[in-house]
Image (cartoon, rainbow, N blue to C red; front, side, top):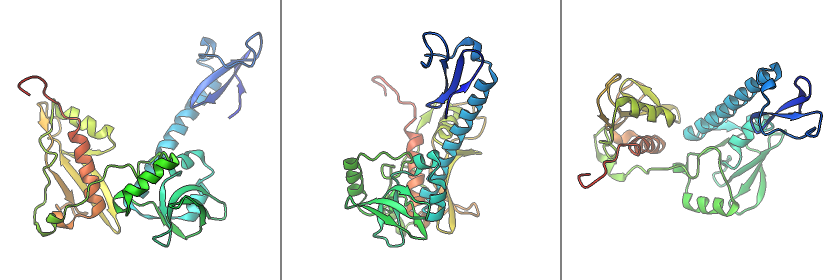
Length: 289
């Protein structure tokens, strides 16, 4: 975005997401100023740029959230849609270097570009840049990726950094022993003490989880089924200290699922939420801890 006039002797522009100013006259002409002059702080052009910067930030966050939702659900995404949004820098940042899988399960690679005619430029796991043109691709959840450790090692060699956490996302494999159980709850991360229910709810919200009633929740779509992982965090308006409760998974009808009926992605995402909440617990110090 270029520089625009803002009153006598100044121009303003968005530089790295912030409003910057430069002088148009005198010794400092053409040089970006370290701070915004007082005379410009209420200027209409400055206000317009600030509001535009806020919109860009919301847009970028929205792109990341949408791509994260595609990845967590492993939903097929039309390649034509990726081609349409790719020119937008915010979408590029959110999508670049994510692992994508085409029609063939062996068509796996890191997304590097999308052309107007619907082709995807991908670095495959042999390090070759190839073009794929499937009708749809998936951005698989890492728990579904075979040889995830090898993919992580290869990504490190390439210096890949993902804006949407995918290959380095914490994952939990569903243990085989739950297949024969009729239980509904996991208590591995129960008992994490917090000074108040408000503090625990605030942590859940800061981590991006929804707080509803006495639970922190994460919704996951597995194929045609929607599953909601839920961790007990205490009754609303509870002013005393509180501990994290057990982790359960509910179906679309609100009923708790048997552990044996929880899919791989829902299991991993539920455990990830429970672990993240538990990690913020109050830790006692001293000899009586």
